[in-house]
Image (cartoon, rainbow, N blue to C red; front, top):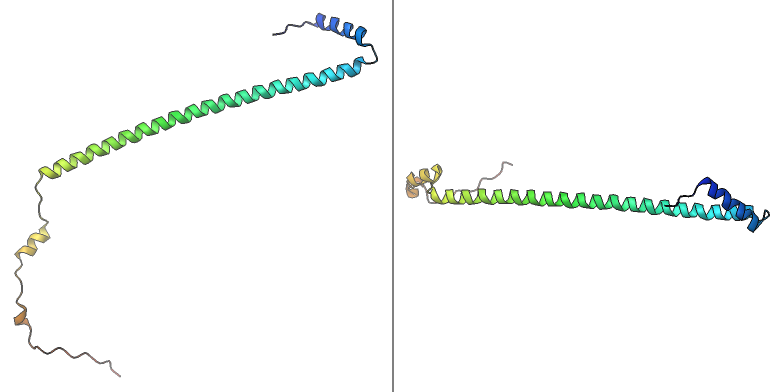
Length: 131
C-alpha cells in the first residue's frame, strides 16, 4: 500500500530534525512510536476479529449443513416407517383373522354340571387355629 524506502525515511528524519529541533525530537519520536504501536495493535485486533468471524461463519454453515443432513435422514426414515406400516396394514387386511389355539380349545370344552359336584348344601365351618 505505502511504499516507503529507507532513503525517504532518512529525508523525513532530517526534515523533522531541522523543523522540530534536537531538543524536542526524542519526545516527538517517542509519541509517534506510541501512536504507531497503538495503530498496529488496533489493526491486528481488527484482523483477529475478522478471522474469528470468518471461522464462526464457517462453523455456522457447517452446523446448518449438518441440520439439513439430519433432517433429510429423519424424513427418509419416517417415510420408510410409513411404508412399512402401510404394508403391514394391507397385509393384515388381506390375511383372515385366525383365532389363537387356546380360544379354539376353550370352545371345545363342555361346561361342568356344578350341581352334581356339591355334596352338601351347608357352608363349611371356618377352621380354628390350634391353641
